Length: 313
Length: 255
Image 1 (cartoon, chains in turn yellow, blue):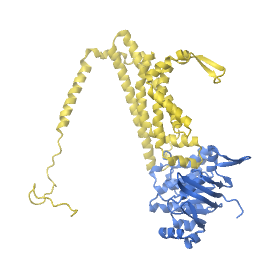
Image 2 (cartoon, rainbow over the protein chains, first blue to last red; image 1 turned 90 degrees about the vertical axis):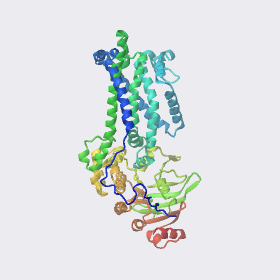
Image 3 (cartoon, chains in turn orange, yellow; image 1 turned 90 degrees about the horizontal axis):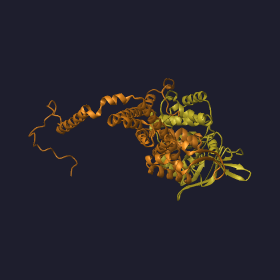
Image 4 (cartoon, each protein chain N blue to C red; image 1 turned 180 degrees about the horizontal axis):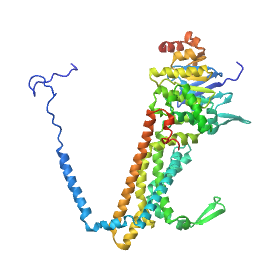
């Protein structure tokens, strides 16, 4: 048996070797691209006609309310809810992730239970629950556990519809963030921890200076994704009559019955915000790569001092 | 010698599961000495080194640094296990260089070196930078101060790792196969830096496969096999006239 290929049969060309050089080349045709494209263009055209010609869209009304004070106020509330819930959720998430990876079984179990509960209960149910907390616990007391109270507040004044919304959103986010951050921490090689310990860092310093900065860099893309989800989830607060973007639109159309145009106003703003967040996420990721590439090319510290350093958290 | 050895390893034993990696290993290293540990892979060399700074906790025996047991402190009623902060303080006296460098990839070279002094010792940033530049010059990498580790060659990364350890002004340097992950042509630069360090009087424990380095630089060479110290002595004797058959057969294969 030989490993060399069998000699080519002299069938198609018939006869001697034929060089391909200088021959006319015909690229592969894609007839289905054109067919599929035509169908899509048709569908887009139909949709565009619906948008433009359908009277009920009332674009003039949309324009009228797009920059309405009430709507813009709702927009600000939506942003406040998003940022607050996200910051609280992430901060809690870091703590939960570290607890979940702790050597202490009690910390691990508490973290597990927390995740199980807050990932399992829908944020909408939570919000309504927090809002009605006063029915369960009428007065919040601060003092010695099982002992005398030092201070107390009426639950209804502490838990407003806004803070109930924040609680529902942030606690759900904390559970999801904890899992992402845990994955990020576990993706940082063990050698990093050892190198930091050997320099003489305490466990806490290792976590804060070496492990977390690297773990958070790994989870920037999923957290950006979560931020966009969060923005949309804030619309749930309309059930608690918190005047966010959606609820502001709803209040207006309950007065003037122009439902579709006002829903369009809300839709446009949500799209604007998610687009901005997507762009911001891309920028953050690109910048992290750029700093490194730039520093890789030029070794001089002085020239690079003004570039952002992501290590200095 | 009557003085207290800088490092004393006393009957250290360690098992991973049912595998006994170290069996009653005892060694002394005096200030200014270079000890090279050689032996086949799996002989327990790296585990021994990691037991010295307690990255691995020995099952039995003790390690003493400057006369104090590593990981424990004396009180009236006996030995108390150290808190993580106390152990960290003790680890500052021992630098360690790893086979795979383990530089902090998110920090520039200069920040890798200043991190310990600034975060752990609370040194101000300007002084730390000045000191770090001095160390980087010493290892021949001052021009790479602003680079990120990933843009450096393995040999350069290892020299930065050495500078990072030296920045903490340790009394003892531990080297865990520092050149084993390097391309052959990069090994020389790293060994040169280590030679300089030995010449400056640094106390060093070096786990290595570089026999020529061990012969030139070591004051004491230890041959380990199967978790035991088979033979220890000055390099002339270990390389020139080994007593044990096991040492001879190992050296005949690596030299």
